[in-house]
Image 1: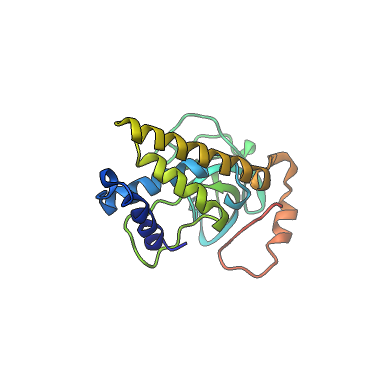
Image 2: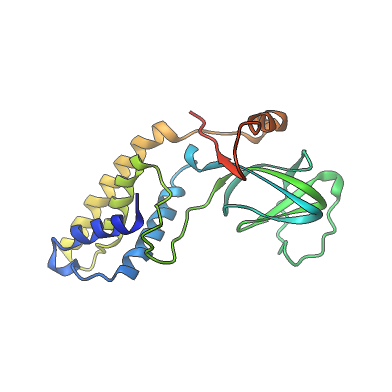
Length: 220
């Protein structure tokens, strides 16, 4: 759905109550971003799973992804699978002294750093919620159409905090409605994906289909 159209719809809802009729657009946009984070992190949605591939001309150990990482499954460098490290380091600045035989990698926001250099990277991961910096009429909210009702309930829940008894009641009503929608959609879009069940040769075979730089996998 168009971002401007969605916020206009939220404004219409708010104008039905004199106390909430004058929330500024910037504040509503902030709440939309917060609501998207809540919904994206509610469970491992199948529509947030992506296969992302990047090739570079010169070998490097650090690659920029198309999305921020929420939950990684498989990262490979030059078709060799790597395992995520649990070493607590600032991977962008820490001198790499890992044992490359273990094939470790680490992630930060939309970046991934490997224990050695390479030229071709393939990633399978859940992406983080998008965050919009302005109400651009060209922006489309990155969420399935049948999840928009949950997003609307979440936004209205945040916009009706418990300062007044009436607001607290509305907030609880919107929260319960949102929860009902999310739990119902969870039965459709949720799944458990185990990294050991994924094989790189199967992933690469899927990528023979026409696509540009990345594609989204739907596992249902």
